[in-house]
Image (cartoon, rainbow, N blue to C red; front, side, top):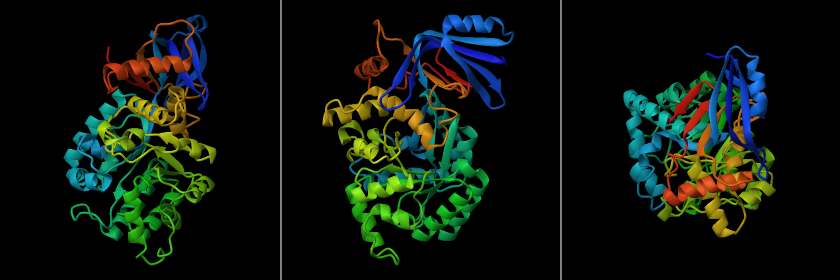
Length: 436
């Protein structure tokens, strides 16, 4: 294996919501370290040629007519729901009961889980995803096998279901607690304590899980305020639980269970009051916005509504984009980006663009996972992880957002799915996927 590795291409480098650099005819030069290749030089190709002449052990990946972006981060998805992504979705709770939960029950089989995890790991890597926050099933091995097969930087958790759940998925409270303790201790910061949502997880189990997660520097992830009928159901349940009878909001339930904090990622967060948003901001709790999942039914979403990202940003709430597989029907973060822009543009013309969508699918996601010093965009000292989106659009003096718009809109015109758009994907310069 070469000591130096270089990629010659044209790079879109997300910096913030409002800034994305276009590095035209550039090279990323990386050096081999114990855990992969780290970028040591970013420069024009001519300068890279001169630099590499002095290096005996080097390899060049030629993608000079292509466009490359950082690898994607998907901060909220269920790998055990891959097969139900496109099932009929009249509403969230019915979809869970009729399709999702019966399918998740199959993961009781270790063989079934292992085969499906290999298949799913290949799919998401082929779509350019190199990290994220993932939900398994109730079973311990749904976490173990994900770590064995997924390529990239993931945090994974087993869902907790101790009440209001079908018998075939219902856990005893003490068993759920024991499993959280075991896995949090084993995987530390790569584990996510994962109540499915407040409907299915009792307060004592959530409190215990939060304590274990914070002791072991693990993450916490769950769902919050995805639909209005979900909120009504949650509140009706907790009005009858001792210690919660005076609770005023969905967020307050999680707050009383000590779930909020800088290592907590809440999925959705569509229907939140000003007071709830303020509390999320105060605790630095993050939100994973899932536009393809929340999209209208005719777009194969759940029709949940649209997250107010402008309000969240104004209140300094950390957020990123996510697929929410299988509520979200598509595996590709490019689909997520397109849905994010399309829905917000329809609601309020010009409210966002594809450069912001790229930032929220890369560096923002890496930051939520504490990986911003290692990944998320192209900077010296970060690992060489990237996704090639195919041929560079024609046209002189195109800016970053124009290039990204052309790439994504061209694909949307020809097909709604984007899995064929990714031609090349690399994680840390070691794990590669190529369609050539």
